[in-house]
Amino acid sequence: MSDPDDAPAPPDGPTEPDPTPADPTPADPTPAELPHGWVRIGERRWWSTWVGATTAFTFLLAFQGVNFVFRIAEVTFRWDLALLIAVAVTAGIFAVVTLIRNARAPQPWVDLDTGRLRAGDRQPIPLAQIDRAVLTTAPVGKGGRVLVLRVTAKEARVEFILRDRQDATLDPTSTAVLVEALRRTSIAMPTSIHDPSGRFARYNFPGHVDRDDAVALVEHPPAAGDPLPAAW
Image (cartoon, rainbow, N blue to C red; front, top):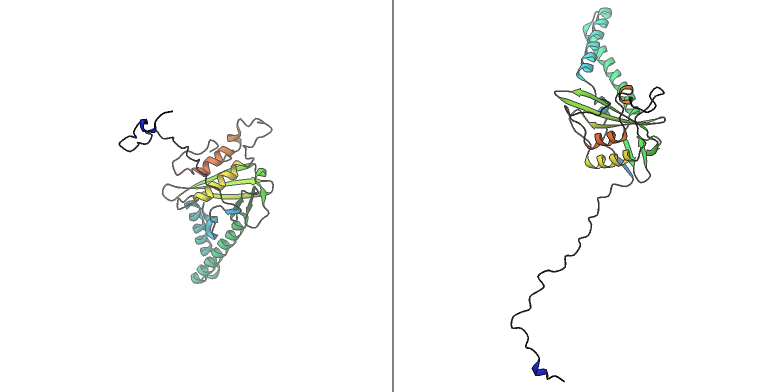
């Protein structure tokens, strides 16, 4: 049996920690969840219907208004009355067109939980039923560009303003939700009986885009001068 006094003495200095401690595995970051329930995509106001109005259209409208004034003046021989009637008629036409256009393209909403899309208070439609997408673009101002993406299903149509006259695009939340919604659709280039494979679809159906192009357009709306999808 060994004598306790013969045990080695403890070291003089403090014990140094192990220079190579175990590297703990960091936890995977939690991905940001998309919003639940109905999410508004962008914000449509009453004047949003005129987002694609070009300078040529405005000039034509003004020309017709002036012509209308002259026609009334020829009949009434009163310029003040002609001007008043012309302004009233023009304002009335503008209001009617705005109401009709807003009724046809109301505010779009998406619910990813149920996989549905709706425009305004209309009946929601499943995302899987959406099978067509059309890009509409128009130059505005000095080097600007308006982009509107229209998706359609049977007896349904919803429009998304991707870039407006002020060069503003969708907010990050709307972009993320719309991108995910488009990925769940059945959007594809249309075909015809003369081109069942769709090889020449971009020539036969200009403006149409497939699902990948639609997603890319929402993620990165092309500014003026940037290339558009092949169908354009």
